[in-house]
Amino acid sequence: MFEKLVEQINSRIAFKPEIAIILGTGLGKFAENIDVIYELKYSDINGMPVSTAPSHEGRFVFGTIEGKNVVAMQGRVHLYEGYTPQQVVMPIRIMRALGAEKLIVTNAAGGINKNLNVGDFMMISDQISSFVPSPLIGKNDDTIGTRFPDMSNAYDKKLQALIKSTASELNIPIKSGVYAQLSGPQFETPAEIKMLSAIGADAVGMSTAIETIAAVHCGFKVCGISLISNLACGILDRPLSEEEVGDTASSVSERFEALIKGIIRNI
Image (tube, rainbow, N blue to C red):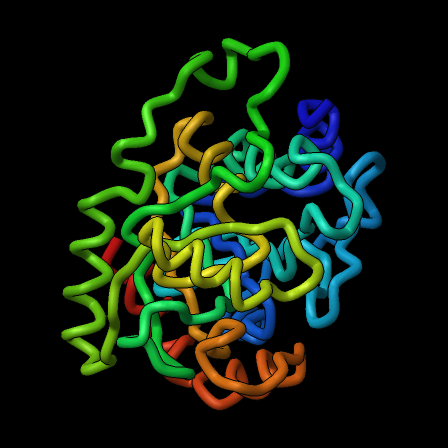
């Protein structure tokens, strides 16, 4: 299916990206840093899943940053929107087929580890995907990747080192930790957060893990950064809201943009 979508894109644009970027909730403004060559709405691609979540524009942006050819997803699609895992990761496979070899995935996440504060950046060192279905279930396409992909280096260690050195160079504090994906759209209960903490999760969100599985499967080198947009349920004795996520993203947008641009420059 995704091959037909790639054909549609190639028939409209002539561009080979080196680096792919997924811009998470509240982080789509980063696309303004791209010297845009093409923009393509998901809705203009026949058969492409369309973003319905707030603050997700739902388009590919093709262009250059720091002299590198990039394609950015300004908004992703999620399981909670009613899409299958295979639909959710379709854009990942498309960007890889277009030529991108490195993937920077970003998200807004709830902080579980008490060493994380609202507004922190957390480099994803590993992930827990056990609570959502794998996008690789079903017949394997050997032209995309192996039946049983190894996930021991899901978040590429060389890219992790590059993120740390870039953050140090820019004097931007960054922490690291394990990200867990749950399906949403409801925020987690205090009991669920206790469970996630007990099994080693430092942050939680509603995306990313299945995208990374698909990315590793199709040959991407992956790195990831979570913005700790709120503290997870039960960490503070107050309700959670999507407005808090957006407010935090806005407050750190300059640092976020500088960090991602620096990573792209140093790749």
